[in-house]
Image (cartoon, rainbow, N blue to C red; front, side):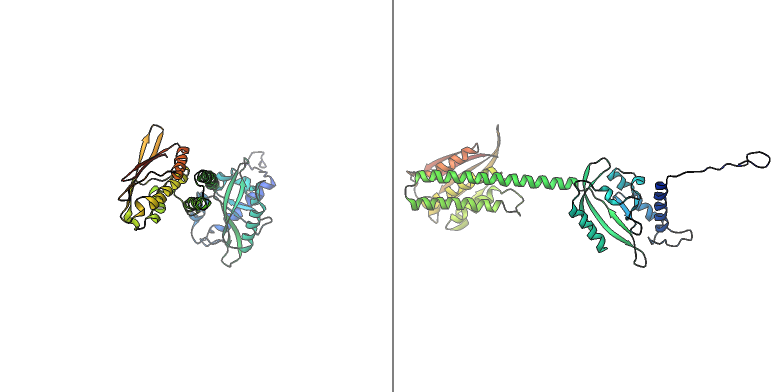
Length: 368
């Protein structure tokens, strides 16, 4: 500025700001003016009932958060904290004045958008999962919590939206479901294969149709009972050998638990061993109750097992021994033992029968 004498008496600068940036700046200034305290220390229109530290806490919170103003056209974002910008990849300047739909993309479902609209219309706090997109185009599953911010008079002033990226969690859940489905499919295939073996080998040994039907029914029932107990939705852990053995063998003991002695470490069985071990123990129990130790009240069955390390890997070895029963006679037909030997061999294991006169002894080894 030049005075009457031609000297420079002062300077002034004209600042030109683009209209869109002026609008965004005005939105931010208006928001802070409404949420902060005025110069006299009185509450602003949005009563935080504290001091400016509250506003700073919201700004620097680690939870992504944005606030929109429904009193303005298209309910634009008027505040976004640093965590929101970090999550989305947009700067604060880029999001101020925009509607939150800027985060939607080709994978965002109509159902999730409708759910958000329903929450907004209800004026309640609720959470909606929606697929959102960052500035770089990558997607994330957003657990979006939405709620109204009301003034002292109860009038709606703002909406808040807090974001939580649950992509990793949902992916883990998806993988877990896939593993569970694969495990179930594997078990079903295994069961069908075992059923084929049971029917085929029992049919070769039995000539009497009634006896054939009875044996097939008994074996398939034992197989199904155990498998159904291990694939229920509320079963989280793999079945343990001791529980499986007790479930299968104890019902065949006429005098109850005094006839059965179980000893060994806790060991969970992989899915591939459930069928052969189930059928194996079922065959041993049914043979014992018909011809062996469990056919008399004083008979005893000792079943022990150990987990051992082999060059090929870990295995479970069990030892079945019957005592105090009637003298053992080697059966002329051994369809049951032949079936479980075949199933055991299919797992890479082996099983040996020792038909001692004092009581049957069976040793088996299954790779874990």
